Length: 263
Image 1 (cartoon, rainbow, N blue to C red):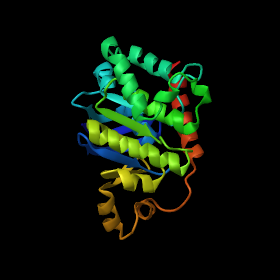
Image 2 (cartoon, rainbow, N blue to C red):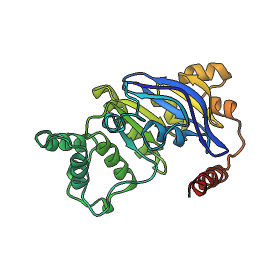
Image 3 (cartoon, rainbow, N blue to C red):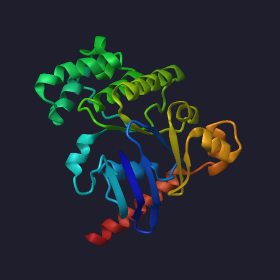
């Protein structure tokens, strides 16, 4: 469903992604893990048409998103780290707006909205303003909305960041049910290693822009001689704290130099 070969992304002198390759099978739950500034978000942006690769190839359901970006976007839904709902609208209105933007046929729109809001336990709050929702309810609504146009792939970028353990558990239970019932391929990032170990069938770990390990959680634990995915992750990436702000600043400075040179 997703095929990445020798993917590279540079910003001036900064090489954010360095010649990575991996595949995600149809119907798989795949975790893409790494420390702060490792290249996860840059990779997701290339997979979802927001950034063009410097070199290498990407395929989503057989499509090249750099060539057929509009068709590729129909194949996936995405939930970013940052909130993207309209606080001035109700839950139902947010769903309806997304349906209109993705040209979901009117004769199936209402039924699809109702089914997803019921699945994510939001139907009773459909006419309430999103500004009244808790963080967990907003996240559930964002995931429901991302599935409205019946994508084959859903990208979840830190979907449980900042949520309490009960809400996180509920979220992943719903995602697993969706994956099993509809066969949706799930590509996720998270800093909660226990979540990845519990829900993901396979894992890729990226560090300094390079994939340093791939396999099932069990295979990575055997490879590192550890008892948990978190221990395996630390064994592979080290335990030093990463300065995400410094990495981001380097990238922004490189992009600014590129932009200045074009003027």
